[in-house]
Image (cartoon, rainbow, N blue to C red; front, side, top):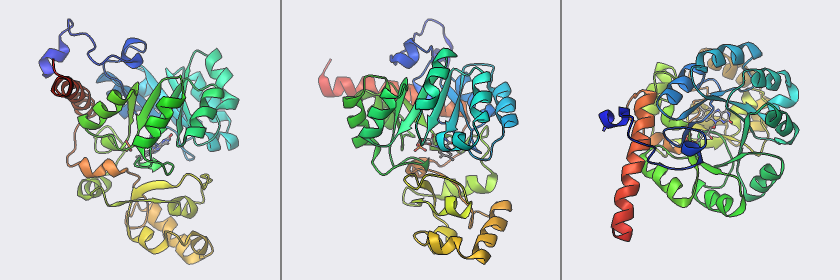
Length: 332
Ligand SMILES: Cc1cc2nc3c(=O)[nH]c(=O)nc-3n(C[C@H](O)[C@H](O)[C@H](O)COP(=O)(O)O)c2cc1C
């Protein structure tokens, strides 16, 4: 299979706007993941035929955007920003635009203040939505790409599952819709594309790639985790004193800290000793205390694989599956 991919007479077999319009080999976007997906992972995903993105959260500085964009710049890349962070640090938006990425995503808040500037700069604007109403608003606010992000997703998300949300978004918006949340195998990619998605936005499946910033200890815990070992919780955001909007808790691996404090966040922030214990644990990367953000697809991850292997196996596997299933289901 691998040999055939390198042959130039093989055209894009999965045909969506991401392959025909954007020129990708596979309609697969490597999700922006703050502290995890920086330039090296983005570059590897793009080199393998997808579109890699750099995640910029509340802690990343303008220098990080410049440095990581320089690493990713060998090919097309995207930068993922957080709307509520931009409210406090508008300079992050300016620096991101200056890097001239192919695409910028702005999630967890409104894209409206940024749409014109991105379009004038020739940069595509994507945003993740968690409800039908948010999809309608995103489209009217100028988003070019609407990412239906289901609650299965790792990191911050909403409360509606990927499948119902994707159906609603596809029925509601005219812009290309992309599926995110819980997609980590060819079956998931095939299902999203068969439903009508223009592509998939994949985070958790890349957590074990050596090109990510996942630490060895976190990687061991990810391998050991099953699909039942995540929790959607605001506890880490409150403990970090980060300004995450309360309607977007984060999905992370359960640990002793979530067992103790999930649902008791107000009590936690009032407890100086526990807040100090959290800070020390986070600084020491003690994952019994601090977060490993990961989605329910974590139950499908059992080995470290390069970003190239992940992209190719998702893309080629989905293509094969769609061919065989279509003929099984519909006949030749
Ligand atoms: C570790 C981690 C960090 C994330 N950081 C961000 C981020 O900085 N910005 C963002 O828009 N989304 C972020 N997300 C969400 C992803 O963009 C995406 O929606 C999600 O990974 C898709 O679901 P999946 O993890 O099941 O593939 C993050 C996800 C993970 C797992």
